[in-house]
Each structure stands twice: as structure tokens, then as C-alpha cells.
Image (cartoon, rainbow, N blue to C red; front, top):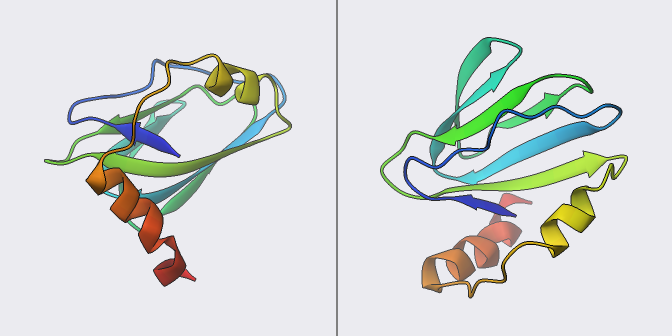
Length: 103
């Protein structure tokens, strides 16, 4: 799960081999890939092709939560593990606890 604070966004990035999928759990944002831009919101999903230069940004008034999957790994798991550990707050836990309602 990735959590974007209000105004937060990824740096522009691309992957040599990996496909990256984002499923929006909560919030509103914008996805930009190879110059194409689209609004995203809870319930939306998008698949970024390998070599697609992309940015995900939070354009809403609250946090943007995405479930993010990359296949093949292409060092994504190592990037996540090397990050700074943070405590999940009540809102974060509520979003995670609501995943069963999506199925």
C-alpha cells in the first residue's frame, strides 16, 4: 500500500521490464503516463506498461491510498523495505480494514 499525503506525488519513473498496477483504495489523484493524464479515484485501477514514464499524484483534500503491484519485481520490494518505517494511524488502519468490503 502506498499513502500519498495531500499534494504528494511520485517522482517521474519508468521500469525497464516491469508492469506496475495501481488500485485506488481511497482518495483522488492524477495519473500521468507518457504525457497522457487522467483523474483517478477510489475503485479505479490502472496498469502502467514497462518503459512507461509515469507519475501518481494526490490532487484531493485527503490522503490518496493505492495498492501497488509490480511484476516482475525489478527491485520494488527492496525499495519498499529500504524505506523509513512509519506507524499507521487510525485512518490508515480503517482503509486497510475496509479491504474486505471491496471483494
